[in-house]
Length: 566
Image (tube, rainbow, N blue to C red):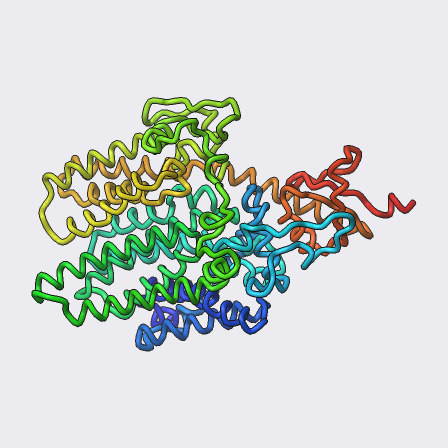
């Protein structure tokens, strides 16, 4: 058996696993659009059909070089990481206010083409109905579709948030594969891969239904895939192009900003190709025409096909592809969420990067507090359990790390060799800087993966130095980055303990004949009650009653109906 496994594993195995898992997300999205249009909904076979098709696509792309072990390993990874996520409950606001609700509704026969999201699809409402949620209706749905497919298999909604962990692992495998193929040293390859995998926002959101960490990680993978596509002497063009296409389709259907960020990086690399070919061929070549057509097809696949339940339904219902952020009746989601009193986004970015970690909104009476770079307090450590901190959201010492990164990149561009590597890194850096200063909301770390990209590039070029003192300094720099990124994990033990207590409480409630519950703030918890087989009905009047019980999971009000009847 061991001999067969060794024969089934090759240098290309990490890439094959990445392809299979990535294509599973893509095929689920594309297949679901067809299913929804046909009036079908997500059921348990949906995941297995999508996974099988993704393995088949990988075999076709890689010319039948994919082994049975790589396919089995990919499935085991998805199952194992979903199981891990199922052990820890999501305690976040966004996760339970609408992400989990969307996953639960999709698993319970919601068809985004033909109806709007409403809990009346799954609940018997005792005294009050629930309005449609505009965010669930209009926002991108790839993570919800994937989560619903896992939920349909396991029957536990918490397992559906495994997408961030999966992306993190895939990013490690892809970066490691790329760097070893390019013959970088093992230490540099491993550490760079770890830095990408353990990016700060993904680590903070690892056990929540938040999608920002997933987007950050997919963006970094897309950049690597674009670099691979650029290096056609080292990497197979079919593999690289299919990976770029798959990752861009995912990017464009995680969030509206994913379409913007991923699109800009693709455009930058396309323009670089155009410039090279035009200069070499003294005109527009067939290669550029072919690449232009392929990118046009990718736009259609991302927005029209993959984004049919989002972009197209938004256009039909509300007259805007990116409703409710644009169009008639648009919703301003940023002004109320901002902690700043001024609209100067350059100033706000500076304050956010070099202040103490905090999370408050304008009008709360709180103020930002500047600090000396590379210092932090116990008060900040306590706030690292926040998955979307508004102030210094990249971590307690990130401001200092960014200063060092700027110094490293400046020195490297001034003194480094002029080669293709400098051009590619310069291209990525240019897009990252343009987004940093061009996007007004860059002060909020969850919205700005491009800022961490600057630190990643600085770590990579510093480790590439041949001078021993600089290399030692580079490794110290990397350790500090990892320290900053991994600090939020100190709260994992607490999350696990709370989750086990919540699990025990839900188990106790299964002995009740029937109960009434209400949690208007965190409607996602209703699906947790379903998963435990608890017989309940929703009664919103409980929220006004101070004499009823409260669960130890997100303060859900409840009372036993048999007590009322008696």
